Image 1 (cartoon, helix red, strand yellow):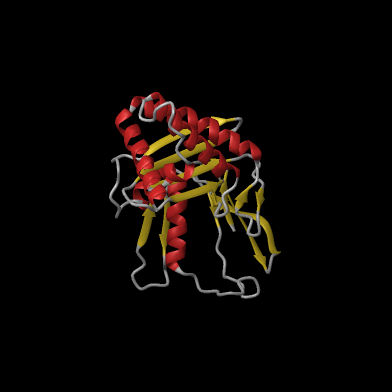
Image 2 (cartoon, rainbow, N blue to C red):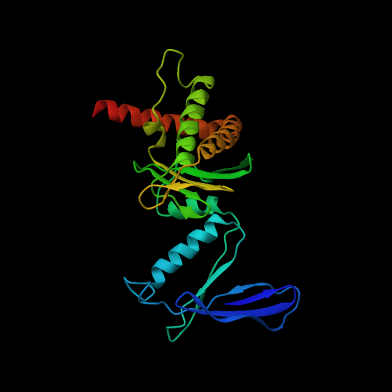
Length: 258
């Protein structure tokens, strides 16, 4: 491990998890140069499944991290190949670009993904969503860059807020009459592609694979941050709001007829 910090360059190395050579200064660097470089060989005692890296898996994960951290530049070079090309991942639009990427081969309901960002009680919340003309729902949630496959409190907060806000808007815009029942969350989410990302100061992960966020305050944070911004967006963009409501009504009619 090589570390550049405060104009100095340090080195330490390990063998099977134990310190081999203690930390020592090995030189100086410009004050603008800082960071950590880790070189390692995969240990078959730890990497029991395989010690061969799959470049497709690595590229997908690096791309995902670049989407989740807008403005962060990540590079990948596979020096095992004769022509070691470097792939650069940098997305100024963050998860908004991620949604566009996920929908790139899909017919979309409106051009630009909706993006909202807010902070609540020290929790940063980002949500991006766009509707397609298909039936598939894609909802990806992340907590501190970890893909929470099993969902959790942040996902619950998003679903609750989305259902409430769309129904409130549908009634206010007179698309739904007073006597009409509310649209279900399932119908509202049909055809939706969404990415929900939270940065929590003290994340608690649950579930068998630790991919479910258990912090109850994350639910409140996502609900509040998303609902306020999304309500405002729908009022300011009535044509998009109407398309979302009519899309849900179509899903409801299809489900009732089945």
